[in-house]
Length: 106
Image (cartoon, rainbow, N blue to C red; front, side, top):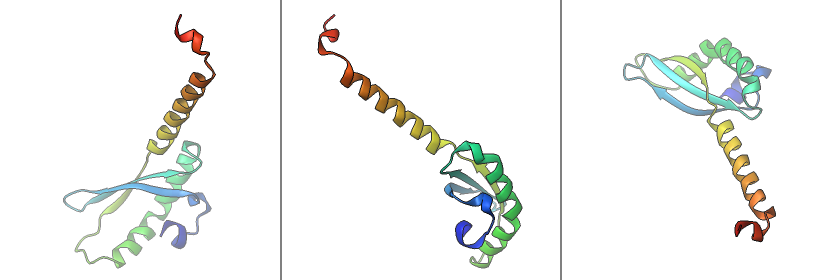
């Protein structure tokens, strides 16, 4: 729905990483990330806040609930952190390949 229904250019490349709804159905905490990373976090969160009323209305139309939760958007750095860790591990693997075998024996 973010990609198809909302025509805000700030929301391109956005994906939802998790959604948690509280027990009372008062709030839905939506964690998001983007391909470009945290450099665009402020811009993306502003775009989502701007569209939150519309998104809430569109979601509520598709569900039969007495009350529909308010949407709260949060930046999720998990994909960026995972990518950073993967790059570190790859560099360690590369270092190990380059390291001469005799250096291991002292």
